[in-house]
Image (cartoon, rainbow, N blue to C red; front, side, top):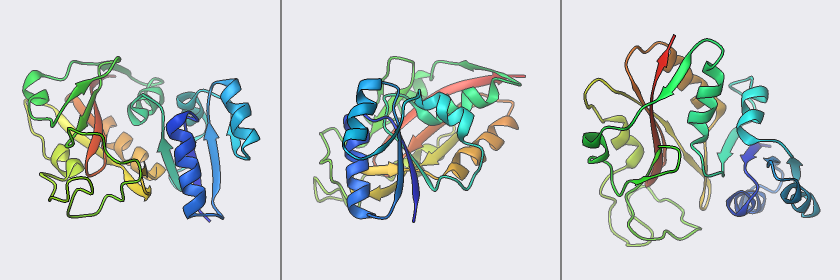
Length: 216
């Protein structure tokens, strides 16, 4: 039995929960959602809901690299970055920096978010919600992917930035997530770095990137 924490219980979180339950009927699934009305709706649908801010919940309750088995981000934030910033706040100041234009120019179809992050996609079309993310082709076009995004982002070398990528793995059609160990491993690497960091979360096709530096 796998244990899943879904961060966000809105449209995407609910769809993720339904898809995971369908694929893994015996799974242990918790949805973290800050809106009380949404929590009540989730509970009426039979889901276990924790009515808390998702980032705060992760920062206070994610204490092991082995539990839960999977974290599924489903809020319009870069969950890995926000968790990293919260975890480092006791010993460091994490200062967001602008992603340089020469890096943005290397990203496929970049779109800047409200808090400075860049959402990235090798698709310039709306992907089907039940994509199975096959290894070699795009399910929409039937053609080979121009790149494997998480591998490409890891290879970026510009100026003095270090690139750290957390790979989002497909857990069910259209549902991606990562084990807690991926977060803790990235955190350990970042704590040792003196240079600015590009932190990305990405699957084969889509991703999100923040740039920051830590001041000890």
